[in-house]
Length: 69
Image (cartoon, rainbow, N blue to C red; front, side):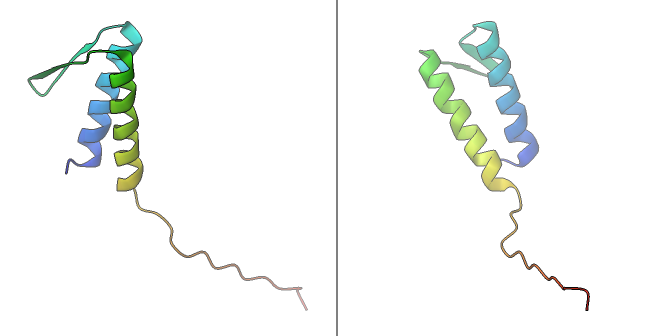
């Protein structure tokens, strides 16, 4: 699996191409051509899901309170 920096770079390249209206994306010497905007959207969703999954999550939250007495 790619690291967070590489996933972010791929997502940024894909988003830039999509906003320009181009369906071909180049990164790391590779070229990918998408058939439709729907394929690009699916690829972006997958990249965003992988980026969200690679970040550290807080699994336990403990709250302590007092009345001040």
